[in-house]
Amino acid sequence: MKSLGVYLHIPFCIKKCNYCDFCSFPDRSGERMYEYTKELIRRMRVFAAEHSDYRVDTVYFGGGTPTLLPSECFGAIMSALYECFEVTDGAEISVECNPATIDREGLASLRAIGINRLSIGLQSANENELKALGRLHSFEDFCRCYSDAREAGFDNISVDLMYGIPEQTLESFENTLRRVAELSPEHISAYGLKIEDGTVFGRIRESLILPDEDEEAEMYLLCKSVLREHGYSRYEISNFSREGRESRHNLRYWRLDDNIGFGVAAHSLIDGERFGNSRDIDAFLRGEDIVEERSSVSAEERVREYVMLGLRLEHGISADEYRAISGREMQEDMPKMRGFIDSGFLLEKNGRICFSDKGFFVSNAILSELLY
Ligand code: SF4
Image 1: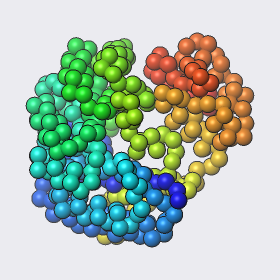
Image 2: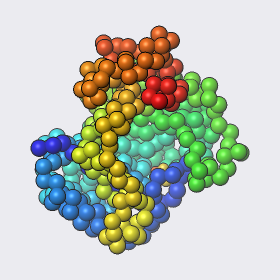
Image 3: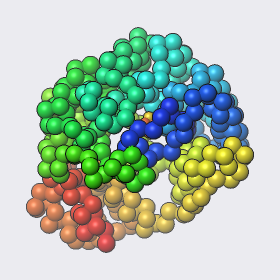
């Protein structure tokens, strides 16, 4: 049987954060959540009936704010998942969690139905930064949520952080890193803020006081060193974990393994075919086909994606794997690679190539030199 990752997009939030361009809709009443759950399960059944040769190794509830979903909806989705698929023992089953939306009972009920990993969106330990981002929770709310999650039996917790936030300084970011690392979650992600069109920040872009590029680079290096000091290893450009606690679901994306996404705006890669769903929740609820992009991944695209995604990983790419995918020699296909290694933008470790810290900051430019 082939291995499969399942992504379930839960597109509901109490209110939009100022930076967010994820697909999410306000829903306080919960009315549409029941309808959405029903339709999600129906689509899961259709897919499973046509793909009985898969067993599920990872499941990820992302959003939006999955922790807004009523517990009976979670229960129904989990039961359907086990009915539809063979789910491996020890499968990683994660839920993204917003500390403003779940209490001790809610966490205990997630644990009771088999959710075994939480990814808590904190972003910052500083109240002024949380306010600037438009987050609904305080750092104290996060700490309460974190300790309730531990009490509920979650022994695999990830915390999401952000750098490059308006008003953030190197010192305030260090405060966030240290306060979170001292709690000792198994996994920490740290992403640089991107200002996207169509968001509140996109509209007030000119008036935002943001750390400049050099400060952002310093923040990234600080992140790496503080987390290393606390026993975390970087395994992907923005992801750090205790040994053996890497996100198995995210690794599937970076390794181009098969993943099926259910729900609006979810993306999939199945048997070499990539497809993405539209954000049209009404069409989704009407049961219409919402796939809006479908393309076969050509052999050449697979090679390019292997290089682009593989270089993000700490252990990088190798000549043997490159040869197995492309049938060609890596250094011959990418003659500029040696120059980037010699100038310290790429590192060569145990026969594998990955970005150095300085290479990471210009990774797009290096990739376009290597691949075009
Ligand atoms: S909680 Fe997450 S998905 Fe919802 S608006 Fe904020 S960043 Fe976006």
